[in-house]
Length: 357
Image 1 (cartoon, rainbow, N blue to C red):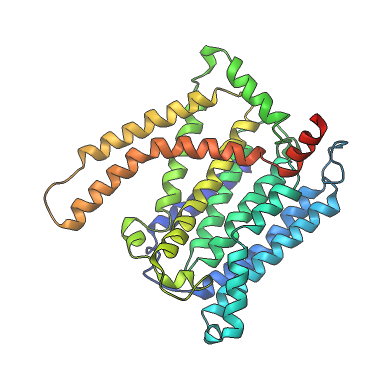
Image 2: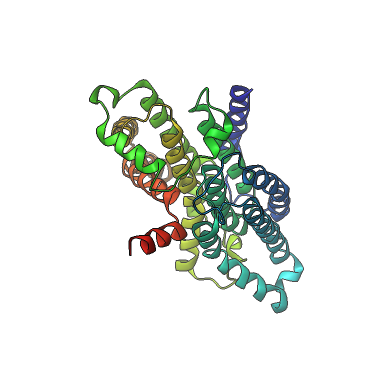
């Protein structure tokens, strides 16, 4: 059943690059419906993950099911509020200062507060930490969406989460999703295993497959909702929840957040794949494989460079080559950043500091 779900999710994800690029159509109603549909689903997921069969003695107050379920209610409320904010700001009521100003305050606060919730109060178990970080990046994405971006994000994350379970064959889902991601335990053990691993096991078929999937999904995360042309034709209406005055520098920052959100979530998923993998190879070896494969992709686009034809054709060929060249560096940075986010916890670090003092 898991392989069938994986196949179905990949088929759904493959539809999005064939759709009209973002910016060619404007449908806030679709954004509202997508965000409201996520609300009950996220609550069910947090309810399922908060019932841990594993007994914890350390930080048991933080890992209590009522506390984790409360975080699920909080994120579900933020999803629903973000969806309503998009619906209101793009309606005729959005022109009223009494409506627009509270929406702006809420939207700006959502850029920082959800990440603090995850770092400070969310359990370090893999499932809760993953869905917490996905929620952190999904909330601003809802506020910045004008079309099917939220649906693409859901399909993209579904493929990534199924990928995690597929990389742990023979293991029960509770053994995978209730792993501890704190630096002092599983992540530290994985790092020590990578440093002391046998050189013959550094480059395996499994490492090659994981690196290939990561590169493929990284490219899909950028081209899934458009292309270079859609980035250049950025729709200012997507920033109405944050500001209604034309500020190119601030709008460029929001465009960067919108483009990078799926990539950062993919990096965290890739770190989780390395954590739950039954054979933990070298992280450096997998990073090297990503670099080598991205160089092969760059060679292909280098052969496709054009110096004649229309400006659009020449510009697209150069853009594709530059993106292919940047994939190697970007994959390394995102893989490192994802590992740090997966194991980072302000509460646990503070507790460890007090213990040593």
